[in-house]
Figure 1 (cartoon, rainbow, N blue to C red):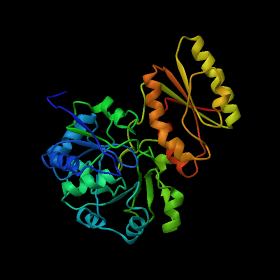
Figure 2: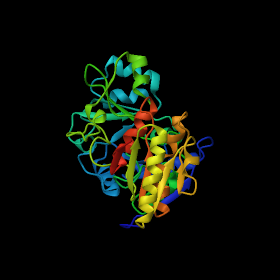
Figure 3: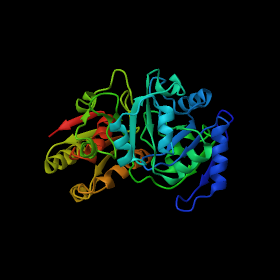
Length: 352
């Protein structure tokens, strides 16, 4: 309990939804409260997107800067036209192919969405999730729901309810535990306001996926250069993100040389009295025998890595690790999103 808020924690099976719980959660949303719910990407902290006072509570609970825009979640495609003033044909084609799913589109907004949501911009970030619990809550609320990731601002995003409890207990009215998320990284954000669609944040829908539908798409220059955007149109474009308490060192290069350098640095850090941990993969974990390492997935199945990345970072913190030594992955497809998150969490990047 914090600031007089008693957080209720409830479990909901996405395949057998208890609609009494969903109705209770929707009532909280409609009263201007905060409900944490699972999506296919990460857990979100939700509020009525049309209630400025409720939206303010999101920023306060997360400790989130006011110039970091929020994503508005809808449950039906028709709702898009109520929130966006212009929906170009290319946006409709992406919605037809990837909604419901882990894709957020930046579109010019209608006045119904206030500056609180959009950080003063004339655009809004909108998505239609596929998670059944999320959809049930939005439908029962009969409101679009603003929902950034349900974590303390800057820390690794939550992929399990336990992560939310760790960060937001006593700061929200309800946490719906719907199990682990399966993508594990926030949605792809693509700006649809220009002639050529531009990815502002990579995620589960890849550049290649979008090109397969539209024939063209590009990355925002800040992604390519690993820089912060000056005026963020999307969450994740500004400020350091996804960072555990431990320092993260990211190693890029041929995997055998990376493993050799990580082993060398691990030993040096240990001699200095620091607790080091290695973020390994199925292909490399045997190269770190006798050392603290967490295998987060298979390099040939990048979804296994994306779904475990944030959990791995949090697990190292729970182990009291001082420095996390992390391997880079190939930046093709979903690897671009994984490397985007690792790059933003890293305090140092080493090329070998």
